[in-house]
Length: 295
Image (cartoon, rainbow, N blue to C red; front, side, top):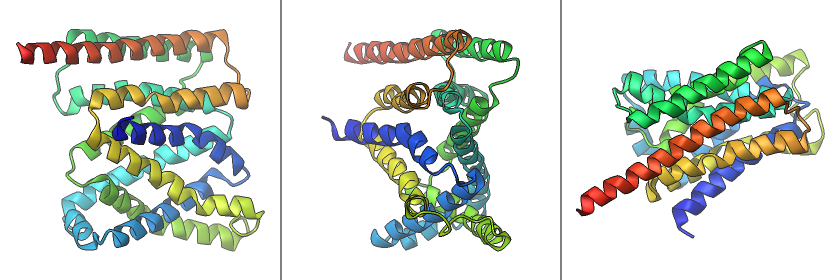
């Protein structure tokens, strides 16, 4: 198997089973899990930077005020995304969180058009319109917006947009983002500890251990993804990205018995059809371009 494909499958596989991880520590409030995730991610990434002897390179990459400003926005976006995801999973909305990551690729395409002046081929507008119809249908059938899915899709889409326009690599970028959030997260944990509501060290050893390991669980798939992105083309990476939300969806329905009504089935099916059209169109366009090049 191609090494890049293996890296991508591992990355998306880890993201796919994360709901089980968060459910295992669901007695800890989402805000505390988020804070631990930030702190231990920063510690783990800092160790990697030290081990790779990239401290000087990291400093050079982040020293400009513009870079700090951009990554401050990125850190807020990823913080909101992580908090929403952890809360959604532990509150019993795994299926809806998976919907957010199904929609995300199409949101990213839309942001490319709106902010980067990218042009879509005619057929690419069809899946975007279908996805919008699917969300509208779910909204009408729920009687309310699927806000968890939309927050996840749009915050991660904006986060990806910011990452696209910055030259900082993924290791340095995530280190900076978690570094920006490190002090607020640490102060929050000290506050809840003083209030007597902090759970680190006050619960069983497994929960405490899993809180410490949130840094590795967060950073490892991101590093694997970065490695995959360098080794395989984007169209392959784009198709493989559906591994994670598909696993999350199946975990929500079959392991945690979340309801999947007929209305949800119709709404999800519209969005799945949109994603299928988008993926097939990309593959066909790549083949057409390759044939033109050969001619």
